[in-house]
Image (cartoon, rainbow, N blue to C red; front, side):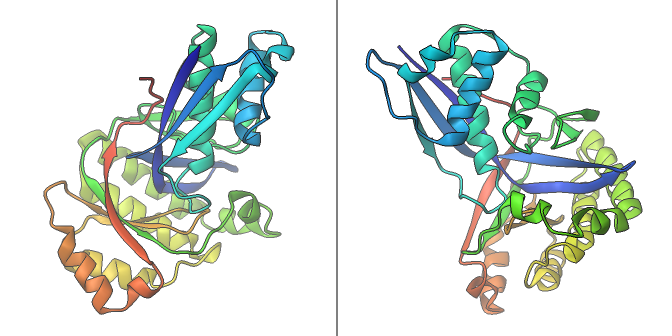
Length: 290
């Protein structure tokens, strides 16, 4: 018997930072996916990817199923998502695995419980939830639902450089630097909330740009000011980043011509740092099946 789970990627976060001494983020989903296929076999199988194996174990533990059955489940991951760039590759693999496991055993969990399960493996993202939310990546607590943003697109600037979330969080002054940005981030979240409620990409873009600039004291993005200038010059809505990754996104209306912006980025040699420049559509979050 086979089962499948599908999870979208993100292009970083709209906003991320401290609210009332705890860390929160609001990410958004794009149309790039991790697809996980599980298969029950008679023979024992190799363990497979560690985080996905742990995801299956957490589901079995949740439903008090015998752990011995795990050795008969094979894992196949087919992912379009770049690794260690801040595009939720691990989060997507884990979420797709949880969804595939639930399908395999004929059980259901809501998107919030799945998010909580994922935090037992590593800090996670809000992309398992259909709505955009203000979300705690450490315990999956949602303090506010913002509505569903499934319009627009993002021009993604992806460098060769990688950066792990674990590395960023282990920085000695990580929490101190986050707290320095606390009030500006709270303002950015308010702008974001209003923007998603009104489906106003201008307000959303302002929120993203504020959060991107604030995060420079934690991890600098090369050419960020130049990218923001080009974005503004050509009428894009704003620039968002992967706060614990390396990608940068330029937010656009669906019918905008991103080729003009790409040409300007190349003219200014910004593509020497960001080797891959491509577009993805902004979609609703949530895990999928076939």
